Image 1 (cartoon, rainbow, N blue to C red):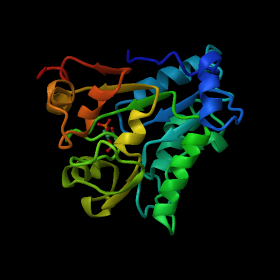
Image 2 (image 1 turned 60 degrees about the vertical axis):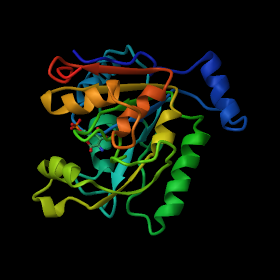
Image 3 (image 1 turned 135 degrees about the vertical axis):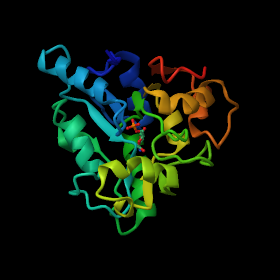
Image 4 (image 1 turned 90 degrees about the vertical axis):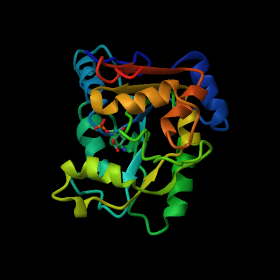
Length: 242
Ligand code: GLP
């Protein structure tokens, strides 16, 4: 089975103190989970959901922040990440929808919406555990190749490869949005722990470049080498080029 992070239940001790300090003394309860879309973390979500149902995990105070969203897709569209996160995270894990945040790709003022998203993460006390998948081109979130390691939540243009990879969720390639809003690499690196999951041969090259390649903007996932507490969980096929 895939990994199930153990740090999702109620926060305590230093972690709460850190959050309280980071949010200017505001009282924060519960862990703050960073959640990714894509197929890679689905096994993790299923295992978490099982533990929630079994009463092993209490998600009452848990908040979640998604990495990214398509630009210009109505949040009610079945493939918007608002919808995907509701289906794969909010509902199965029994999270309070008011505590689940997804970047606003339909805002009239995207710049302001991005700043607001960063502010909400800060006010929640920062992300405790960020789940990640990896794109075949080495992207994390929608930080496509050439993303700055210092980047924050912002508008990005999707790489042609990403649009082709994600076309399976839409009627045709033409229906895949051209742009997105994504947390930056700088935002992601501020999470206290990172957990990246990848499986299958199609990810082998990106995994090798992430783990053993140089730190390089052409492989945004190589930024994980800078993080003091990053775990990568891969199957044999995804590890075949290491
Ligand atoms: C999308 C998401 C990424 C995800 C990637 C890989 O592009 N924005 O966060 O990691 O897809 O998806 P999958 O896990 O389905 O291979």
